[in-house]
Amino acid sequence: MTTTIDSNFAACEALRLLGPDPENWVSDRPGIDHNVTIIGGSGSGSTFVFALRRAGIGDVTEIDAADDEAHAGVWLTRARMRTLRTPKNLPGPELGIPELSFQAWYEARHGAAAYAEIDRIERVTWAEYLSWYRHFLGIQVRYQTKLVRIEPATGFFRLHLEVNGVPKVETTRKIIFANGVAGTGGSYIPPVLADLPRTLYAHTADAIDFEALRGKTVAVLGAAASA
Image (cartoon, rainbow, N blue to C red; front, side, top):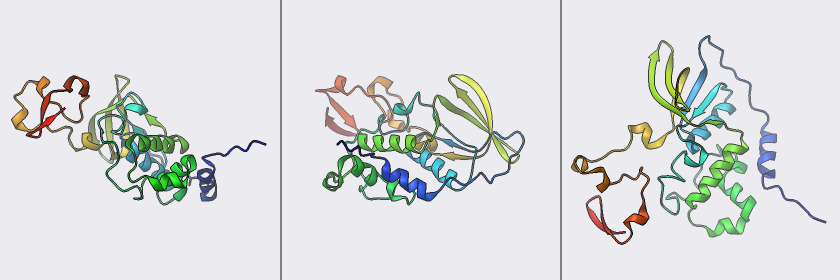
């Protein structure tokens, strides 16, 4: 006799006992496309989507300029550390529902003993968890949707977007920025480097060819380092 263990069983039961999402209590307004627009399709943005849904706020959209899930956020792109810097037991996107936590997800797939052995969460594993969280909760991210400009209006905002390269205007009541460095003004290049040829330096947000640097000596914030 073969027994099949569903790794999502506990999470499914938690949602069943939590009950259906509340109905949208926000009144419709003519000419308004979204109640909330979330800029950024990684972990924080998806957590906001789930939190708003459970609060009974409908017509929420989440957009990201990246081509797809693998290129959204930092965990599979510009983040290059092997493990997360934060302790593994800090609260995360689960919003107080233990069965949606990283620990529950990891133990359901690898066992409690395996979770106990890890000190810090591996970066790629964290990205896998966030992908599961997004898909399990049915959170839809509109990729290839770039925010170009925000135009304030009376009681709402006009969002000037590029959707698959095509200009489009949408309206929203509220905006949440969950796009990390881009939401704080983008990458910062110190003035001391501004006049250097762009080929002589790289920002951590850039795609860096580390193989091309192998065996060379590079400067990292003024300190010499061997690549």
